[in-house]
Image 1 (cartoon, rainbow, N blue to C red):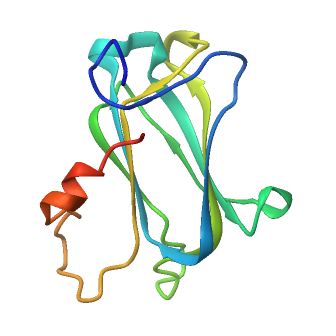
Image 2: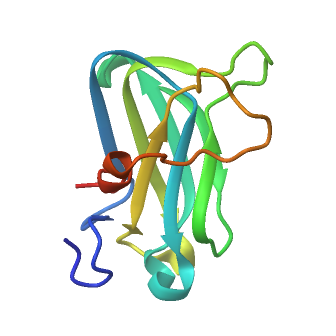
Length: 143
């Protein structure tokens, strides 16, 4: 648990880029990565440029999205959908979230929470993803 914010969060120490590697036991469909960051509290520790990569393992990761953040406070939604409307998800064994740079040229980084979503069975247009049971809410933070 983080002594600064009271949550389980990702804090880095060392040279950039900072990596969060998530491996799955079987190939999964992923549609959305959601990060909680807070420029007001973290200042130079806040990511300003993030890359999301996917693949079968470390040997063949490909960049899916790169996102620039400008003083973000709160949840940042990164869709993994491609440019083609038929590409609504990524089918992968591994996801890598890369913090390429921080605000104010900061060295270390702080991401307060990370959530990863697969496609919904019956999506409701323009409705944000939400955890619906107490079990999912309990496990909705990085541990």
